[in-house]
Amino acid sequence: MARNGEKRKRRRWLAVIIIAAALVAALGIYKMKSSRTDADLVLTISEQGFEGHFYDAGERDKAVITFSGSEGGSSASDTMAWYYKQHGISALGVTLFAGKETGKNLDRVPLEYVENTIAWLKEQGFEKIAVDGISKG
Image (cartoon, rainbow, N blue to C red; front, side):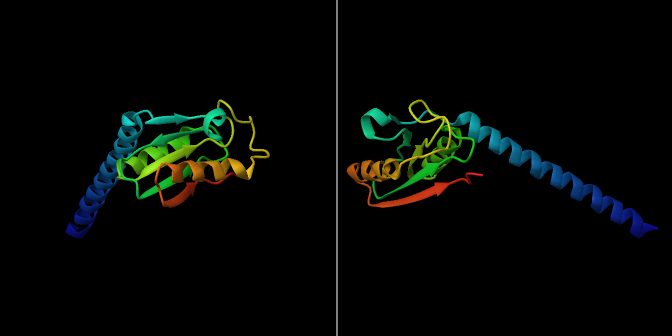
């Protein structure tokens, strides 16, 4: 009988730990999203040849270009870029479609658009450039 009581006690503690971990994770995600600041620089197609938001971590050795998924716009790419900045890496959140100056749909995005992002980062002094993106469907 004592063993059953111990098992129940362990299960309750395990449930408490799981719930606490879930709450901590949820609060961390909320804090990350709610504390995200605006980009350090807003870039437009008419001026730079692409639409994006630059998050400057102050270092010029490496940068990451982030792309959103099939939802389009800049929300996901900005969140990823902001996250990189928080970890000391400058990042450029690029809007491929559904932005202010882009097409409405993920359709016929020219490769030069991405080349322009790389060229711009190189002009800023970045030599190591990586890409991080989300599935397009």
